[in-house]
Image (tube, rainbow, N blue to C red; front, side, top):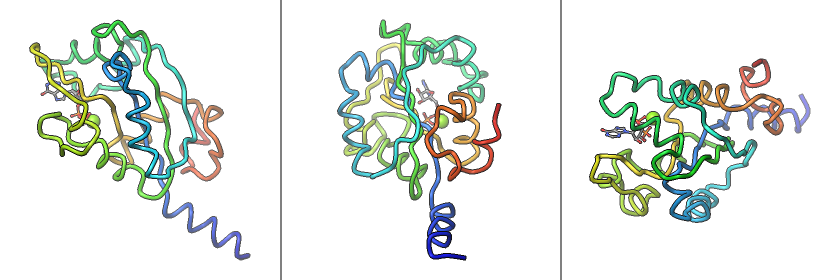
Length: 173
Ligand code: IDP
Ligand code: MG
């Protein structure tokens, strides 16, 4: 094995890909730049980025694990931008060392009032009177979720250097 092959093998082991959405509440409030500037110091690579008009089907598939919850329909409306008059979200795949856990840490806890104050959700998130969590962004929680979400939202040809990602990205579709 050459030194370069050794290095790329180590990169493969140490890095993971995570999926992030800047939600409609953040877009409506002009917080795209603020969110990205909190993520940028992690020095992850943006290997996928796009504007997505979220269909009901995509919203349902994304949040399928919450379909029994009383707030499910509101959650779908939220992701579709219906509650903020914002007909799109920004979706990203970020790649790098320990990306999933580090992005979750910077994002903060789900409930904005319980999130660490310096986190993105702790800094900018809020709960509305109707119980809507305007928590600014979505970020994958673990490798299985990241895999499922990246497959759901991105085609492999929309991702940069998918050869360094796990095999599931390059074989999809
Ligand atoms: P996460 O976004 O931190 O991963 P999940 O439990 O996966 O949290 O929930 C997905 C989204 O559903 C949350 O980001 C939030 O928008 C919404 N949500 C979760 N729990 C509640 C709740 O108790 N009330 C209202 N909305 C909720
Ligand atoms: Mg989640």
